[in-house]
Length: 93
Image (cartoon, rainbow, N blue to C red; front, side, top):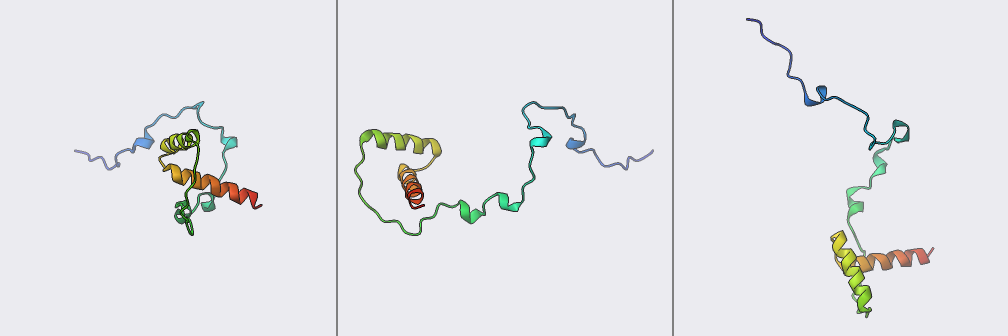
C-alpha cells in the first residue's frame, strides 16, 4: 500500500478566482505604510481637562444631538463637546 505524503490542500488553494465589479481596479490601489493608521492611544477620546458648565439649548437642538449620538453609539454630551471643540479649533486658526 502506497502512502500519500502530500499535505492536505488549503482552502485558498482550491478557490476559483474571478473578476469582481465591486472591487477597485489594481491601478487605483495604493501601498500604505504603518503610519497610515493612528496608534491605539490616538484612538481614545481624551480631554486634558473638562470643565462642567450649564448650557440652555432649545429642544429641537437637543433632540437632534441625541438622535445623532444614538446612531453613533455615543452620548450626546460627548458629541456636543466634540463639535464645540472642533469649532473652537477652527476659529483659532
